[in-house]
Amino acid sequence: MREFFIYIASLIVFGIYDLFMMPRAVWRNRKNLPQYFHNVALGRDQYSNAKRGGKADETISGEDGYYLQKGKLGCCKIRKYFCILLDAVFNEKDHCVKSIDKQEWDFM
Image (cartoon, rainbow, N blue to C red; front, top):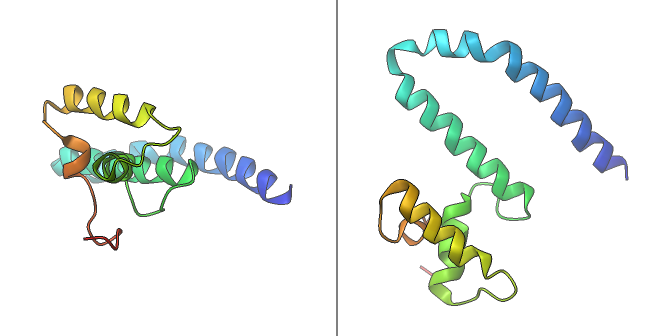
């Protein structure tokens, strides 16, 4: 139970930190904003994957792509529909499969 409270406290503390530090970060990275926002989005993606129980250094797309490729959807068939959605959003065929981090998975 203690870990749950630490998690909630970290959400609050880092949320406040992000609120105050984001303008400074944007200003410091103003010459290369696309790369800055890409890095932030990638970090958020990895954080969300870790939060749902996945590998900490893997993105949601990569993990879903791994399970899609291996046919191991099990009870999580929503992975398939999520990957279809990402294909449309990024206008890229097989986005999830292309996002697999081959170093994270020992089968490759």
